[in-house]
Structures are given as structure tokens and as C-alpha cells.
Amino acid sequence: MSETVQDPAQDTEVDATTEDQADEQSQSKTETLLVQEGDVAGDYLERLLDLLDYDGDIDLDVEAGRAVVSIDGGSDLENLVGSRGQVLEALQELTRLAVQQDTGVRSRLMLDVGGWRAGRRKELSDLGTSTAKEVLDNGEKTRLRPMTPFERKIVHDAVASVDGVQSESEGEEPNRKVVVFKAS
Image 1 (tube, helix red, strand yellow):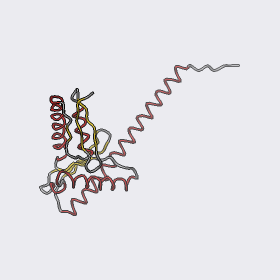
Image 2: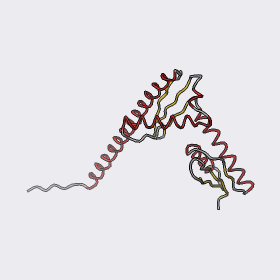
Image 3: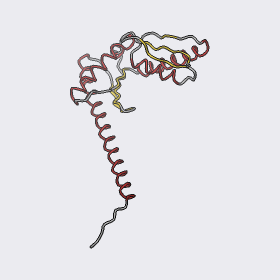
Image 4: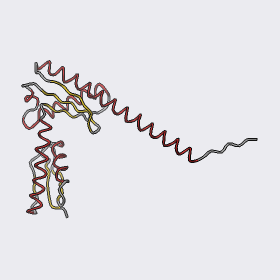
């Protein structure tokens, strides 16, 4: 009669390999879904540009776990941004809904038009850093004007990079603002 003996170390190695393969498959599925989101969004925006008779080049990318779509090049594109990015925010939401309708999955897609979001990100980061330094110097709590969730996140991140100050959001949408204050 023969007896089979299993080495527990081998089981652990097999389990770790299986987990690694599962992680790779999960990442591959996520990447595939994000690429699909970008493709659907690109098609949707291409049709929109055609309807409006606007020129623009659509670029698709995946960054930080989300599909990123940008439209560049056309002289009329500022109309797709609007005052303080309001048209861009609405267009992004419509594009997300088009992606959700096609894929069945809620999208976190980010849309930029004419580099507006990239420029706004820099502007808001500078605002957050300078406000944090002022609060650190004078000790007075500062409330910034109302911002979108996208804008508040950038300001919060900039404030967090300055030691000795904190930030939080207060109020109700659409009048929610960032408040910067000295850390306790």
C-alpha cells in the first residue's frame, strides 16, 4: 500500500501562483473594459462633433484606473467647455451615460476639451497650495468659492501637501466649498 504525502509549502506556492494569475486576469479585464469605455466614448463624441460641424481630434487613454478622453485641435472647442467648465461637465456626464448604456457599467470616464481640465488642474493646485500657506502664516480659516467635486479634490490634494493645515468640504451641491484651516 502506498501513501501520498503532500508538501504544504508546495500548496502555498500553487495558491500564490493562482492568486497572481487571478490578479492578472482581473487587471486585464479592467483594462479591456476601460479601453472599451474609451472606444464607446470616442464614437459618441465623434458623432457629436460631426453634428455640430466642429473640428477636433479625439485621443483615448487609460490613466489611474479610468478611461480618459480628450478632444483637441478645433477652434470651436471652447464652446464645449463653457463658462467655468459647465458645458464640459454636462458633456462628460452625457458621455458617461452613453458608455453606461452600451456597456451596462457605470463609467468614471474623464473628459477634457482643448486642455481646459489640465490647465484648470494646475490653477486649482496652485490655489490650494497658496491658500494653505496663507492659513499657516495667519492662522485664519479660509473658505473658497463653491467648486465642483473635480475641483475640490484637486484643492484638497494640494492642501494635504502642506504640513500644518487641513481642509474639508462644507455646504450642499452646487454651493459646496473647500474650507482650509490650521491643523490641531
